[in-house]
Length: 209
Image (cartoon, rainbow, N blue to C red; front, side, top):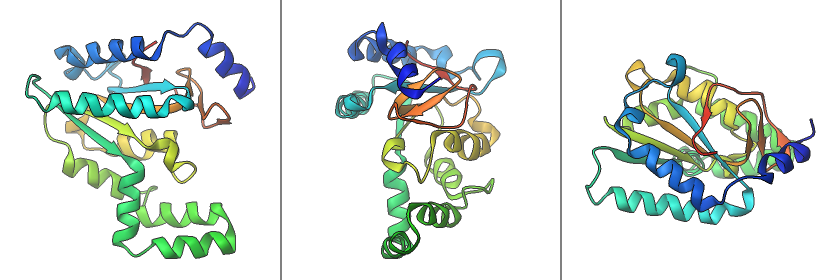
């Protein structure tokens, strides 16, 4: 099915963004949400998909969630990972920014993608993003992952699940992880920006309908 057809039908009867935020916010507060490995012992991974044009509203709500969490009313800590910022910081640390510009001018974006993924060791079980999350994720955390749209095509959503999250140590198995996805997720298909179909994926659940 074409991506545009999927997204049009998918959003046809969708509730408002604020209603879906309310559903997600309530789920996060429930203790069992943070103590389960998910349905049928699946990992506790979730997707909040949204129309790309609502990006700024989503960012604003995430900031509000974090600010509210800091007030100390909750028995968990919201940890927010902007994948784009993490990658840019790593590239800067390694002096790789100017190199990527030259690589793109000589070989196009795909050469940049290959070089950055090699530098981050994305295909390795102990890749940089795995180490980063392991180091910065405390106990009793709820992890929100943002920036996947800004990363595309350097890092795609299926790679985040399959090459990063699934390689985290076992102690993170019950840690809820919510990926904010600018596009469509049908629990079978990922369509970033409602334009480009990524690899099929079905092991995460939509956190708000």
